[in-house]
Image 1: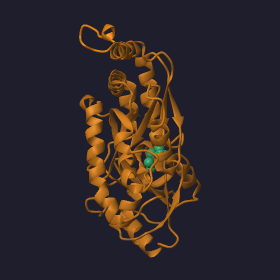
Image 2: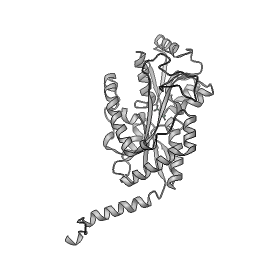
Image 3: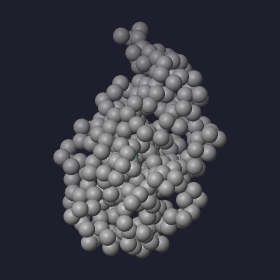
Image 4: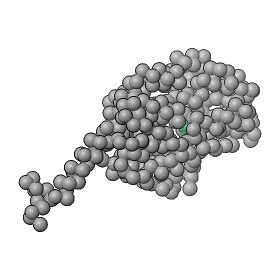
Length: 327
Ligand code: ASP
């Protein structure tokens, strides 16, 4: 097999693999890319993904098509991508739930830290505590008193165990020491429809889904979970101002690819994500929805990897202390 050795001592097979990887990366992408959103269409993750995908499509010269695979708090869609071909044509846009579900689910169809390659961070979205328009309490203090007095009848919408709305709702119930009845949906897009229709009472949801409704007066807002009030919602107090000490939550989002996706492909996607996050249209639309794009240094594989590892470690003891798991 001596004849198969290259001058660099590599086997021919290894050299061919290397050459074909580079050739692959040079022609990538030569067809449409599917970006899986693990929640329903019309919700907050979908909104972020569609803005980013539209801009990445221009940069990559191929369509980045959003596919909604909702259910089980985002774990179904993440599982779909974990099992996809690692060829750069199926990617995932998910949020903080990628970290919390690693502990919340006793049985996940994938091993969170070993099933994905990283592309980069996208944005960190504040949450809002909102209610149907005609919900009685006037402010956050009133809301806390009301739900404590009516804990058997008040309902809280969320997008399933592992969703941001689930996490925020759990933190709220724990902060006021009152368990409430939760109503799970495949995303807070459909949950918002029910909140607007008055079928459910309250929800903790991202500004990317609630800002327009709050501004339009179609739902009631009690608090934002950011450290400061938001420019787009100047009359909504922070949860801390409203009396919930330390109640701050930010919902970071990241883009992933299946494990084994070539590094030059994830790098290409990362560069494209960085371009999208500077696109004036993306910056403006994110701003209108109460958020900002992640800085370029964070829209990188290394930054997302560090974030996911840090967040799994951060939420593990909190979830274990709460002792609430999904099977
Ligand atoms: N991000 C979810 C959605 O897009 C909602 C959530 O995580 O609470 O519907």
